[in-house]
Image 1 (cartoon, one colour):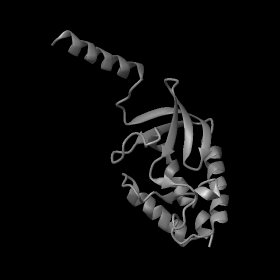
Image 2 (image 1 turned 45 degrees about the vertical axis):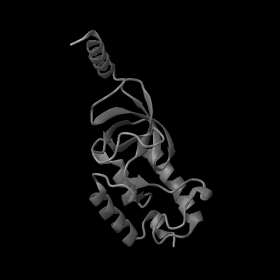
Image 3 (image 1 turned 90 degrees about the vertical axis):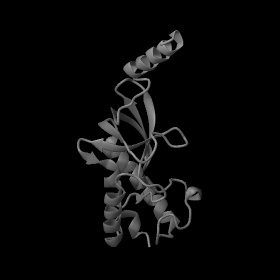
Length: 171
């Protein structure tokens, strides 16, 4: 093995050991800021601050101009959806802010989205917060991309829609 190859291997090992890159399927940290119903900031155990996007779900937008007709099947009342955007954000804030969380990566999607946010399932203890948002009618399933827990999330959404829970009560 030549000197360059040894240097590259040593550099990769050093980055893994220091936590600058991680091959782990999960990370641990504390939620320090909630942006909206599906985006937040987590301070990882190694001190790094990361922006996180909850994989598999889509909460309504806080700004009405960012909402798209038909985005939430059967719901056309944009002002009602915006109301639930704030409810979703507040719920996520109350459930997670200042708490220790586990971030778990999905095997079907990359680790990051096009904006550099980590795409994760967010757990507090054994509770899947992503799925909880869907169960409470505070987010829809993000159908546009396949993900590991799609079947469970679709079942939770179907129940919320049938029972007109949360945003599904908007019409």
